[in-house]
Amino acid sequence: MRILYLGNNWIGWQVLKWLKEQGEEIVGLVVPAPSKQKYVGEIKQAAGLPADQIFDGSQLSRAGVKKAIQGLLPDLGLSVLFCYLLKPEFLRIFPQGVINLHPSLLPHNKGTYPNVWSIIDKTPAGVTLHYIDEGVDTGDIIAQEEVLIEPVDTGESLYRKLERASLELFRGMWPVIKAGKAPRHPQSKETGTFHRTRDVEAIDEIELDRAYGARGLINLIRARTFPPYKGAYFTDQGRRIYLRLQLMYEEEE
Image (cartoon, rainbow, N blue to C red; front, side, top):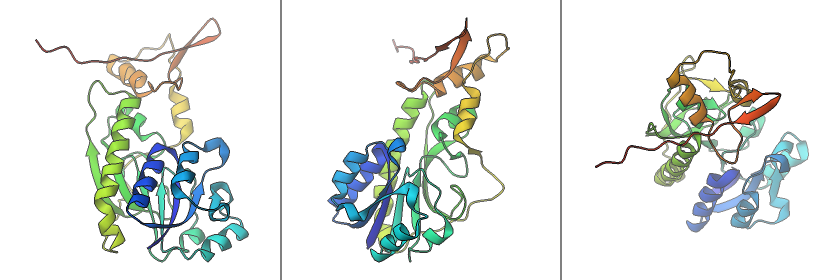
């Protein structure tokens, strides 16, 4: 199977490295523009491809880029934490479609920061392998795994759990996908949740003169605790004061 890999971040690196260890054929690599790149140096090294087989994800709508990718004759596209919406004409390049690994339990928390919203909205957390369609995380589901949210979890610790679960789910399902026997379960178009990046920005400020429920305020601060990112804050004398929450279970006697 000839694979075009679209990846970013640590899990994007780990999935690609694992595929290469299995001897899979990666014919092309698409990475985000420099401003959005994370672990891209490691991803490129793992891919081991020449420069003319590596593409800027922000340029996929250009005719020359599309033609170059078509020339690679990919059978399948694999997207892992890739941060661009893929258009229908791009998706049609791949005879076996494009599959995405998303760190939420779809249809809950489509879009960005699913680790944050699972804590704040008290929606189930998990990871999903699904086909990409014209929407954002709305395609047919291949497989899912729920991840437990504990009272001591922060946005960071839940994110790490989702990373590990993502890698395990992908490894477990890859033989079925490779054999062309991946199941497809349509998502409901009327249920679930969706968030954009600006939705997190809108909740980050804690208003000192506003009344908050204790549970909601704790969930907000812990969901946005992810050093070194700044997260939730309040403003005092014109300066922002950022908060991080440390949680731990009581020691058992």
